[in-house]
Image (cartoon, rainbow, N blue to C red; front, side, top):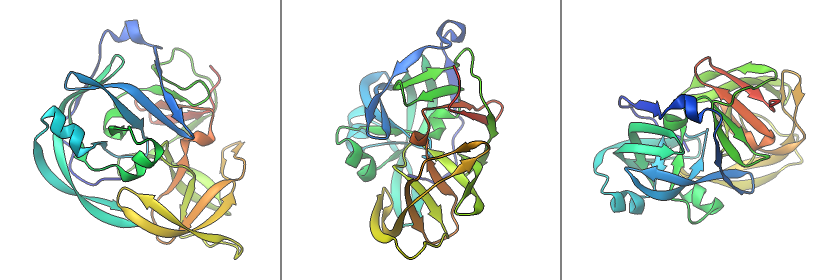
Length: 266
């Protein structure tokens, strides 16, 4: 779920941040995906948004945008390795989850075909254009989103931004690769990787189209951490790969200093 367009100026705020630091925001789980069910947009809601660290921008169904009276401000190319679509763009005055609010934020208006395969009631996607303004813990084990947790311990992993997404160095299929930490990915996705000849072809679906991938099971190493074999899609091309955030019990993201803690000790 990727988009390419110029971002408008965004203002983020934490209301009385010192009072709300460490506050849990409860999430729902749908398999390996996490959903925030108490999202307020322009003072209306609640809406159900998929939490997607692998989406550059926030997105919303056209029907929901029309209900909110969101005007179309432009159109952009929505690009992925399996296709390109054109999406309308609007401007949201405020997006609020718990005490966290981002003002004046661009939103893609799209049917969210891939996201709605996870849950047909999803209204939108919380992407990096919202998440990048906060330090937070995404906790799969306890199904929660925690703003500014008070104490996080563990090995830190520096990330670089790739088209606005958090990319880290990881060893996979014998090579060091850039992988985006993606809470919207059901499995590992590697580009330009060759299979071993025993895999099968599968059709993958994204919001930008469909394509064929080789399906296998592979491990990933990041520092001292080694994953279990996970479902892996091998696709042609040279794009940055995707590592599902659900491979970890929890992830702490420090956007101010540009690092992650994988499976932190709290």
